[in-house]
Length: 310
Image 1 (cartoon, rainbow, N blue to C red):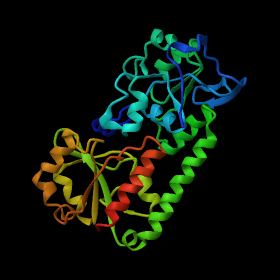
Image 2 (image 1 turned 90 degrees about the horizontal axis):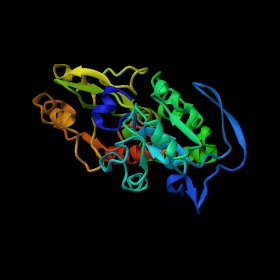
Image 3 (image 1 turned 30 degrees about the vertical axis):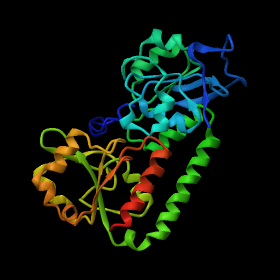
Image 4 (image 1 turned 90 degrees about the vertical axis):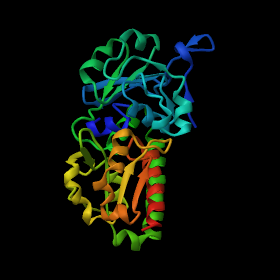
């Protein structure tokens, strides 16, 4: 999605599961219930009432579909990576057929899966050519939309708004629990998320800022209100910007290890001199990128543990 997201590994990246090859008990699988119209960024398209065989062109969409109760039948190469998602999500995706590298879907591989819907968020030009195979729902995630806006659009495309409402309710409940239990810590601390970058740089900001703000956390380090969900490059020499922060959050993968660029940041002498780091208030997060509400709830759970220590 961005250079920062790519450096962290997750790139433009009750369950009903489809059979391989478009077959179900020897017959072609068909989406039941007629059709309906869906408004997308590539116009109004006609889709099955309840799509059963969905191909995605990015791994974020795959994770969005999983928590809505749909296992895609086709995903880009490299989507199922155990260090980038929960063990449960990895188990659901590891045997899904692949359709080529992200950004370059193979039309023949897609057609072989007999999809009734294709969902795309990043590759409008490439995915548009697939409309001869199945309806393509393009929801542009390159123009500043937030993660929860994107998943709402994906939920509409696959007719899973009821599941989305349940997820939002779970998220709001967890927010309320943590805000009530840790009101004092929330009101008296200043936070910043950051990650390692290339060539002596680090990034301020991350989509997890949406969750931090929903919790009422004050975001420091000069991170602009309008850009906190993005990745803002800084040089190591600018690390003094973190001096107003009570606590810091940095990313780790689902195996608990930082990526090489973030490890380089953690090893740097300027990082070790930051007051929050010296005080032991720099915390790892497996949910630094927002792919869906499960990631958001995971971030709330992690921040709750951090609040106990500040």
